Image 1 (tube, rainbow, N blue to C red):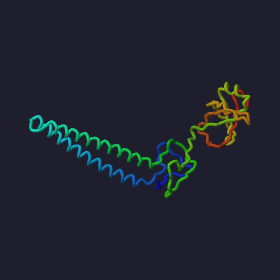
Image 2 (image 1 turned 30 degrees about the horizontal axis):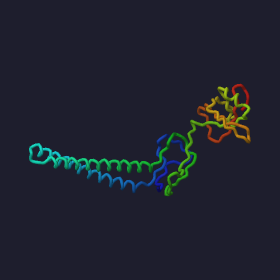
Image 3 (image 1 turned 90 degrees about the vertical axis):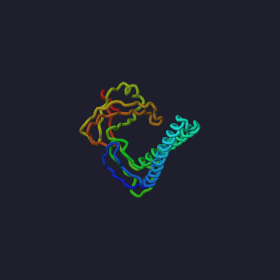
Image 4 (image 1 turned 180 degrees about the horizontal axis):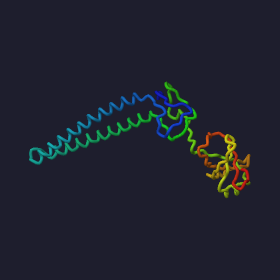
Length: 216
């Protein structure tokens, strides 16, 4: 659809669920209004069908009406009820389509890049924002394969960040990916550092040192 409003730019910090971008949903809103009107009419017809059924049952009990008339009125009620249910489902679907014209932040983080502008036409699958969760940063380290057994037994690791040269951070092994790079003879060690409030960003370089003192 057509981008109607963009509420944030690169560098903004947003919380999960924050509205980032709105697409033009006017046609969907008109369709929802039409379905809503049809549903109100169907509910009125269902109420009238219930009224006619009650009259037919009353006449049948007093032997002024036939059983076939009662059965016909029951069938009419069932048909009208099915129409109401179908329109209610269509209404819910239309409301969901309108909601999907609102792009919300899936998690809390920092917008590193905005790729959409008001007035731009976007397709499903197009990237409109790049959002980074700074709280879940990890470090993937290529480790020579001869250290595989030693790393498996390493409980903790010290992290030295080039951007913060005067501090060391404690990290733990998050995962060992035992798929080696045949050309470099390495495997990947995924490290989860405890960075606290340190001002870092994805893409920064780091050095890993095992607690035993052996550099990684």
